[in-house]
Every structure is written in C-alpha cells, then in structure tokens.
Length: 123
Image 1 (spheres, rainbow, N blue to C red):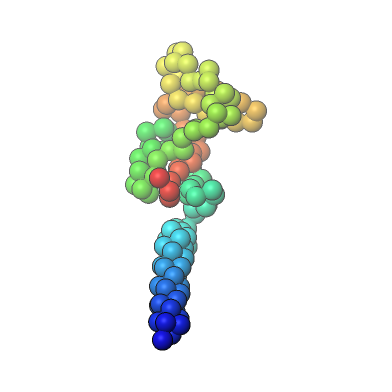
Image 2 (cartoon, rainbow, N blue to C red; image 1 turned 90 degrees about the horizontal axis):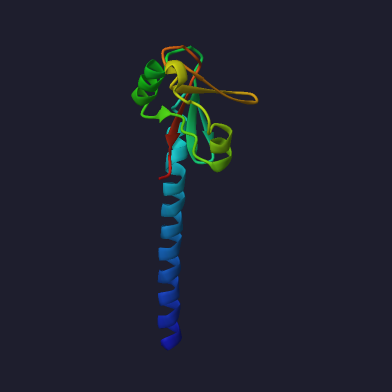
C-alpha cells in the first residue's frame, strides 16, 4: 500500500516536471520564433542587429531604428569604449562618431553614413 502511494506520487511529480520542462522550452524558443519574421535582422548573442544599406544622418538613422523598435547600436563593453574614448570630441561641431577599421573619427551629425540598429532581446 505504501509503495503504491509513493509510486503514484513519483509518477505525478515526474508528470509535473515534464510539463515544466516543456513550458521552459517553449518560453526559451519564443524570442527565436519572432526573429524569423524580421527580414534583414541578424541575431547575435541574444541581440538583434539591423545593418542599413542606405546612408542617413544621425537623426534620420535613429528615427529609422526607433521605427523598428530598436535604437542605434550602443558601444557597451570596455574594449569598444577604449577604442572610441577620444571621439566624438565636439571640435568644429563634430558631435557624432563613426567607427572604421582601425579606429574612430568624429563628424558633423548631419553627414550621411550607413548605420546599425540594435534591439536587445534579454534585459
């Protein structure tokens, strides 16, 4: 009698764990499902990136990103910060930065360049 009761409890517990595992798998895959419908976006390290094919000013670029539910890419790690620490420096109205290999340069924000949007999936 006791063994039957313990078996039934274990079966019930196992069933609950299977349901929880299925739920977690579904939640984990939910952001990836939404990516498939986002043409032109690249998924990398839990973020989405949109790389433009047309040149725009900083203001126009930012507007294009916000219309896509994103923002212009933000440099947010130490290695990237060290590379760009002196630019933009505000000289001669050059308040926007442009990255290129091997470094950085600052330009007037009205100049037109290609741009990248970043959308964070995990907060």
